Length: 106
Image (cartoon, rainbow, N blue to C red; front, side, top):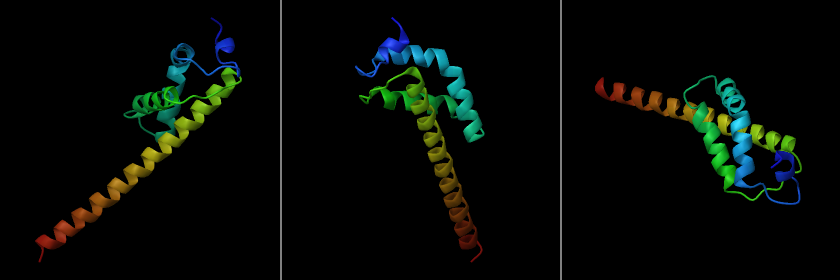
């Protein structure tokens, strides 16, 4: 079945059409996540998280382009969330490490 027809605004996007989009654009999504985060390690996980969240929602899209725009925005937001989370983890590791060192020096 035609992807455009399946993504038409008259019906929710089904699992099958997301599967087509996932397979068709997967490498682009992973590359985009890698570029946005600056590391390869979590890129695949981010893409999978976005698609899982998308499958759990009932969204209506007018075209394949609208779906792609939504996915890229979701990927960007998820990457930024992970970057911020890592920065917070690093801050607390530094703070707790400094507290530990100062406690040893007492």
